[in-house]
Amino acid sequence: MTSTLPDERIIAFDVWHCALPVVGRRDHGIGSVGGTIEVVILRLTGESGRHGFGEASPWTVFTGTPEASFAALDRYFRPLVVGRSLKEHGAIMDEASRTVVHCTEAKAALDTALLDLAGQVTGKPLWSFLGEKCRDEIPLSCSIANPDFEADRALLERLEDDGVSIVKLKAGFRDHTFDVMRLEHIRKHHPGMTVRVDYNQGLTRKAALVQVPDIAARFRPDFIEQPVRAGDYRTMAELRGLIDVPLLADESVFGPEDMQRAIDEGICDGVSIKIMKSGGLERARQTAGMAFAAGLSAYGGDMFETGLAHLAGAHMIAATPEITLGCEFYQARYFLAEDLLEKPFPCEGGVVRVPDTPGLGNSPDMGRIERFAIQAATDQNHKTLINC
Ligand code: MG
Image (cartoon, rainbow, N blue to C red; front, top):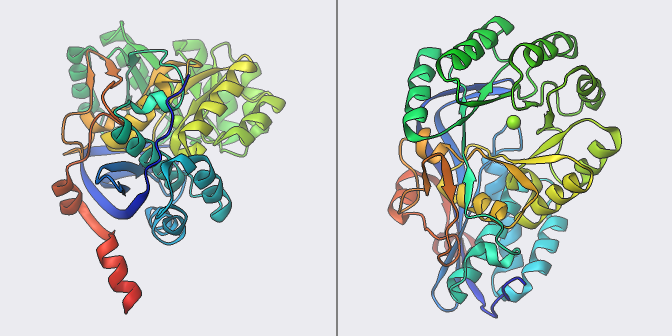
């Protein structure tokens, strides 16, 4: 039985676009990230004075732009939310989905903030509004994606010291030889680690048909993820028949609609579930449920996020038994120079611990939000703009 949403009216809606420094560089088949990551933070205030927070974590080459998330929230979702009761959560999310197409990250932020506020008001953890809690801990995977492999050698040592036993090698951004060299290093020096390989759409069809079977046969990774472009369902389905390790879809499957097509066309053995792709926590759970019903596995993926979005994903996975392959909520600990959360994101000993305290179980530090903000639309300056 899920917790009941409280009848609390939302009286304020504040949005910040933040740029947070990161400690290294991450290369992927579709693009690189370095310098800063950009996220959009939403704060809802209820009539009791309590706050609920949510995060949109877009990546321009994958889901969309921070500017689009900011505008979706500030301009289009604000009027759907202010003055409404938290009891209208379902109607608000339905109206948001019909008011703006795409912008799934902004919808995830709105969903998260509504549920966080409901948790703060009732004293219940966010997961309790989604379903039964099926796990207290989620195994953590960290990505190996630095073009400077010396830096990743040091990261691998640190991960092993920290008890992290799953790594995902980001492949397909340089050449096959570089991917093979790094996999050989991990197998030789970290034999206890579970290894996964993610191409992030980096290969052409022609290259994928050669390189993916080679990696599968030589290294037998736990799974191989999204070798080719998101829309290339034909090659995904063909690759699946050429390898005997599971093939995961990530960019090919955003939400339930893509999931159905992926199942119908037999493109994958599993799927990466992300709240930033699905446009909300319930839609993420629905996507995982569809995968499971079709005999596919599910993994808890993420974008370039702060601990705030990680927490939303952790609560979603805690209430979604079909997601059995762990999560990749590593950025707060291993990639950001400084996270937004007041207390450290709860990962220790190679697992993420699901909070049982109210709402998300942790809040961002307002001083840090303001320090990292490059644009803001708070109720105060929004009124000023309207009055101009
Ligand atoms: Mg991926």
